[in-house]
Length: 301
Image (cartoon, rainbow, N blue to C red; front, side):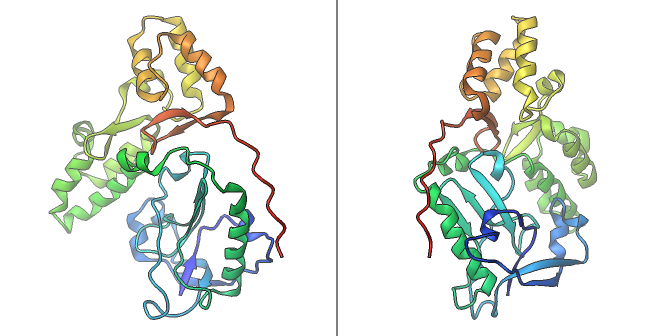
């Protein structure tokens, strides 16, 4: 039996054109969820939507979930639902990137519940206007950059296991730069608190790790905050020779380098509402292309 939880029930695929009456049930919360961020906040039971019926592996395959961290930092991406899985509570079972949709449940139509069939049909209809839509952060770029900063919290949770698995210590050291280890060692609680406190001030460091950027701390605003670019411009205008401004602009703005505050300000004004920051796209501010009006979906029967 496959279940989904953490649904965004307001999403269009649950509201038409087929009527959807979700089949709800209750399951034990997987114990391993506690090893992932947010997992220890869940209760002993989860209220879930039954998507497919049958027995694994006789009737359907295990299915697929995707990494949820940083997924929605591109405006062409939607996280819609998790699913009971071997990873964490927010691993994505239903989601969209540009013209691609992940339907992570592996049961064929004969095993889908009535609501599963209806949502699948609704998904096909929902995706038609996105035909041909290009990805703002292509898979090739996502595969060559560091993961999203929330993985720092996941790594901190992994540190809980090193007592039971000492061989994890060397691997963990590769995930935490010297600055983090100097502040926390490999103490899981300290690492989690450290990264929670500095989450908005992180930058890539080392082998898939993250370090606090002292330039961001001095600026006083996180790199993915909407206030970042404005505050950077104001500081640069007040101190045209400030090397911190030049470093931050070069580090976090994909269109750089910029000669001065005026050139950065012009770029911001031209981009307008199309600006977005992507961890998965290199920890940088980017500009989405001008959107064309999607075609009107053909009538459905």
